[in-house]
Structures are given as C-alpha cells and as structure tokens.
Image (cartoon, rainbow, N blue to C red; front, side, top):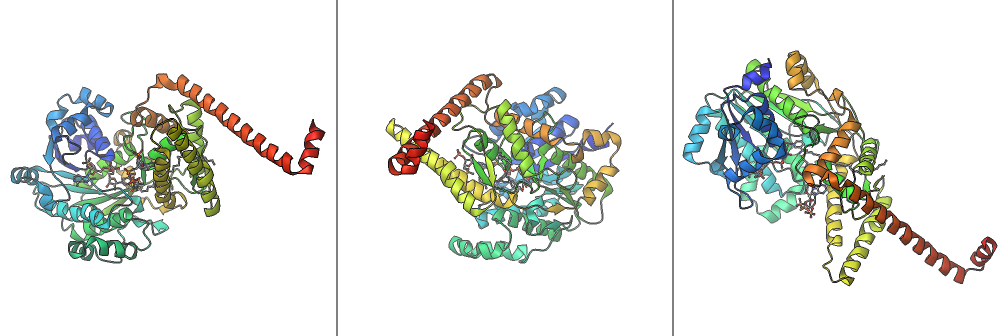
Length: 497
Ligand SMILES: CCCCCCCCCCCCCCCCCCCCCCCCCC(=O)SCCNC(=O)CCNC(=O)[C@H](O)C(C)(C)COP(=O)(O)OP(=O)(O)OC[C@H]1O[C@@H](n2cnc3c(N)ncnc32)[C@H](O)[C@@H]1OP(=O)(O)O
Ligand SMILES: NC(=O)C1=CN([C@@H]2O[C@H](COP(=O)(O)OP(=O)(O)OC[C@H]3O[C@@H](n4cnc5c(N)ncnc54)[C@H](OP(=O)(O)O)[C@@H]3O)[C@@H](O)[C@H]2O)C=CC1
C-alpha cells in the first residue's frame, strides 16, 4: 500500500491554477491514486464565456481524465470549484466559500501564476507575489492546514550559474516592490522595470524569485515547501505518455518546426536542455506534500525538480530527435519541409532569419495577394521571431541545480511509493520521451488524426519537389545571367557541353 496515496485519503485539498497545465496533471494523479480523498477545492475564474462548471466539465471530459473516471466515478462531486480571481482583494471569494475553505483545508498546492515572460511588471507582481502573500495569509487562518506547497521555477535564480536548494534574497525587498506597484503609474513602471529586474531575463523569473522570498518571510509557523521545476514538458508515463495541452516551453517550437515555419534557432547545441516531464513534477509535488505534513521539517525545504545533473540531455540531441520523429510522424499541411537548424551567433541568426523566415513569408503573402486572399504569413513569422528572441536566453546557457533535498526525499520513500510516485528522472530514456512528446503534440495539441499520416507524407513529398524545382529555376536564372556577362562562364559552359 502506498503511504502517500493513503495520506491523501479523506483530505480536503486546495489547488490554485488547477485549470493550468500542471494543475490538471496534479488533479488527475490525486484522484487516480487517492480516490477516497474528501474534496479538492479549486480556485477558478470564469473565462472565455465559460462558467466555472463548464470549465470543470471540460477538464473532466478530456482524455487526460479517462482513467480517473474508472477509479473514481464520482470525481465531479469531489471537485468543488470556487469562483476566485487571484488579481482581486481576498481573491474575490464569497464569504461563505471563504469560511468553508478556511475551516476545512488540509493541504494547499499553489500552482497559479502568470508564466508569460513579457507580462507587465504590475501584473506579474500581482499574481506571482501579492497573490502568494494573500494565500499565505489565508493559510495562516486555516486551523486544519498540514502543509502549504508553493510551486516556483528552477529559473527563479537563473541569474546564477550554480543554484542550491535555498531561497536567495532579492536586491529589493518584495514588500517594497508590492507597495510601489500601488502608487506608481504604468509609464514609470515601464521605465524602471529593466533596472528592477537587473540580470533576470524577464518579469516572470524575477517575480517568481520575489514570490519565494515572500513565502520564506511571511510563512510564519506554516509548514511550507517550495518546488522548483525546470522546463515542464509533456507527460512521460502517466496517465499516458505525451500528454500536453499548451504551447509553453518547447511545445510551441515543436509545432513551429514540424509545420516548417521554424527553420533556424539561435541555440547552443551543447547547452543542457533541462526538461522535466509534467508527471515527474506532479509525483514529486505529492511526495513533498506528504513529507512536509508528516515529517514537519524545521525549516522551509526547497526541492529542485530538474533533469540536468542526474540525466542530462542537450538541445542538439533533442533537436535531432525532434526532426527524426517528424520523418516518421509528420504534421499535416506543413508550410515547408521540417528542416530546422541551430545557429550560434548574431550574424548567422540575422542571415537565416532573413533568408529562411522572412523571405518565404513575404513570397507566400505575395502569392496569397495574387490569388485574392488575405496575407498572414509575415505577421505569423514576426510573432514566431519575437517568441524565439524571448526563449533564446534559456537555450544558450546551462545551469547546475543541486538536488540534495529531492534525492533525500527519494530515499525516504518506501519501494511502493518510489514506484507509484516515481520522480527519479535517471530512468528517463530521452529519445523515447521526445518521440512521445512530438506524438503528443500532434494528437493532443494539434488534434491531428494518425490516419492522416500517409497524406501528410505525400504533402511533404510535394513540398520537396517544389523546393527542388524552385532551386533549379533559381540556379538556371543565375547561370543564364552569369553566361550573358562573363566570358569565363561561357567557356566553362561550352566545355561542359
Ligand atoms: C544539431 C541539429 C539540430 C536541429 C535543430 C532542430 C530544432 C527543431 C526542434 C525544436 C525543438 C527543440 C528546441 C526547443 C527549444 C525550446 C526552448 C524552450 C525554452 C523555455 C524556457 C522556459 C524556462 C522557464 C520555465 C518556466 O518556469 S515557466 C513556463 C514557461 N513559460 C513559457 O514558456 C511562456 C512563453 N510564452 C510567452 O511568454 C508568450 O507567449 C510570448 C512568447 C511572449 C508571445 O506572446 P504574444 O505574441 O503576445 O502572444 P501569445 O498569444 O502568447 O502567442 C502568440 C503566438 O505565439 C505562439 N506561441 C506562444 N508561445 C509559444 C512558444 N513557446 N513557442 C512557439 N510559439 C509560441 C502562440 O501559439 C501564438 O500563435 P498564433 O495564435 O498567433 O498562431
Ligand atoms: N510550464 C512550465 O514549464 C513551468 C511552470 N512552472 C510553474 O508551475 C506552475 C504552473 O504552471 P503551468 O501549469 O505551466 O501554467 P499555466 O499557465 O498552464 O496555468 C496557470 C494557472 O494559473 C491560473 N491563473 C492565472 N491567473 C489567475 C487569476 N488571476 N486568478 C485565478 N487563477 C489564475 C490559470 O487559470 P486560467 O486557466 O483561468 O488562466 C491557470 O490555471 C506555475 O507556478 C509556474 O510558474 C515552473 C517551471 C516550469
């Protein structure tokens, strides 16, 4: 019997960010392994015209929850969606709901965050710092609370090269930042943002670092742990391989490469690609929840959920495997044949952006105009280039994350728990994982049918022929011009003839 699964039985659990990528995988695992848990409160906001209930049903109706419905048929009764907006005071939770949350919650998993790199500092502070502060305040009023698990990111200290499992101080105290956001207007915040974030690459990583300091400073007597995952990717094993449902991290780039839009990326092939599957993160999170509640460590423990120091893979190997998978499992209706490459300096990056990204987009838009359609490729390409520029920071550096606490926790688990809540990334076979990841992107993100693979292959053949035809025509035109202008070229031509 799994001790961790048994621990969550009968518990009331509060999850923020349950509608996000990690939140869904977390809920799924909780219900599958501890179907006898009492209730999962989720803080949800209405979105895109959907009510809370519609959002919950949409999640439960997805393939991700198929196994859960078998082991826990009344799962919908055990999810209690509470209307909440983490940007509002007291999260805009009604008095009755607040009373229920405060009196029943046993465990909190705080996953909600804005993960956009370019978010305005005011919004990023509100969600990643102030909301964390408010949640801690709520937690301090929960008499039955056993553990508060805060999800941060391994990149919260990406301004350092070697990162230990400790909370590092920030140059400006979070309280001062929170206060200043209240009275500074947007224009001034825009002006001071680069100075405030200093050597952090974006507002996301900076505010996640501030969030950790808030957790440490304002955690009081709470039983707290911080988890720092690196780049969360599709699921490795559970509930099935390859599940992913958003474009963050590598997923969006896999689509862009598979559809032939992305032809080159400024990345260092030897830099460590510190990906971590979402189910590994969730298994560690649940194990940490159990350990924190049962063993009550004296101080706030930080757990790195990373792969680089235990089972490293680099971007070069990952890129090659992604491309190899496209050969077997191509995406439908590609714009060009998938054939991306890495560049390593500014000059080649600008060159390939002009030749391989902008020029084909302009030519295609010209063709769309000629055929009476609305041009769209240049706009799409500009967005892709902007996304690439934001991700570049993370694919041209390597970090070392120590994992003492994570390894300590692994050794504390019973063999059964090590199996059920496996977060030992040493067992991960990268080539297999990446292949399943690409397959998952095709099935669950692009919603493409596997039956369409022969047609997709045919389409790629047609693109290859067009490519050859285009290159031959280009060569002949260049050669014709050369012959007309140069005696040497003419002599070579007659010699060959
Ligand atoms: C040797 C041979 C080699 C061969 C080589 C072959 C290579 C071939 C294979 C290539 C694969 C292998 C290499 C992979 C490298 C991966 C690097 C990952 C590093 C991640 C580090 C993460 C570290 C931190 C981890 C964390 O701790 S947290 C989680 C991380 N957080 C994020 O990843 C949010 C990022 N995103 C944003 O920050 C916003 O998205 C924003 C970008 C500002 C746009 O923002 P904006 O343009 O305003 O608008 P959107 O609505 O957002 O998107 C607008 C449009 O862009 C699309 N799109 C949004 N995203 C992405 C995305 N990623 N990738 C692509 N497209 C995206 C969206 O579909 C929409 O398309 P459309 O609808 O127009 O068609
Ligand atoms: N994805 C990754 O690669 C990594 C993620 N992390 C961390 O993991 C955690 C989860 O990330 P992930 O699941 O990928 O992120 P997602 O963007 O998929 O999910 C974010 C969640 O936060 C919720 N949320 C955002 N704003 C509000 C708000 N104002 N009120 C209520 N809820 C809100 C979202 O709700 P809604 O559905 O309504 O938008 C969603 O449920 C985050 O803390 C992130 O920093 C750490 C390392 C890597």
